[in-house]
Amino acid sequence: MRIEHKIRIINLFLVFITPMLYIGCLRLDVERNEVQLNQNNRINKASSTDWSELAKSNSQYESVKNNEEKELVWGIVQARIFVNGSKCSGVGGFMGTAWIVRIDEHNITFVTAAHVIQDAFHSKKDQPDKIYVFLSHSSGVSFPISRTDIEFKCQDVAFVNVSKTMDVKQPALERNLEWTNLKGKKVYNLGFPDRAQKDVHFKINIEPPSATFDKGPWRQAGRISDTRNTIIKSPDVNIKDAKCIVLDYTSEDGFSGGPLILDNHQIVGMMSMVLPTKDGSPPTQCLAIHISEILSLLSEL
Image (cartoon, rainbow, N blue to C red):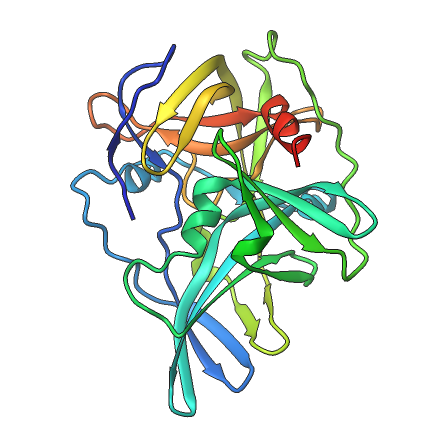
């Protein structure tokens, strides 16, 4: 995983930036079709400066207890399976967060951060016999997804289209398109942080494919520090003069792709990345993509 990249940020500042990518690693033991996941060691990093890890010292989250909030978000779950004769083993876990932006007669469209879903299908440390990726909900509903289901867009946005094979309802939260008067407003974000996985029991079914978990999601809260048009260029994240929201708190792996919500329960953006500091101290801010950018890209589908 690429951790440290030089980038150019217009109207922000020149920094090294790290998207909130999945770094956790869970071990899973496979027997026939059913897989149980248990905590294991983390993937090692090659970078000398790990902004994702530094951010965790300032990042706080709590379990979501509100059912309406639970209904809103889906975990992106990856399982990398290795087959050795009649036995299977593997690693996996939460990669990030997604949420529904559109439902029609035949399809359900989710949105997430492009760097998260791209990483979910890429095995960097090993070559498993099979990579499974799921959109999984706390209710037990899950959809297996493939690369062909994904449409990558600019602004670190990706859409995942799945066939409507079961009755799934789109949460009724409003979308707030306000842009000029957001500074100082209270917000919260929802998702599936990597650190929380140590207490989660996953179950993966190979045939038919499904993934369930017994805890989550989680939430963070703070205020909007600023709103700025931003350009970011890096191998992982590309944002082209987009409306972005700077938060006065930092986030961490697993929250990327999740919704940013005003205190009045209106969706205002999508979580994207942590913002490292100039002096190398733990990050204290993160960045979200404004909802208007997401809806504009959605209209192009």
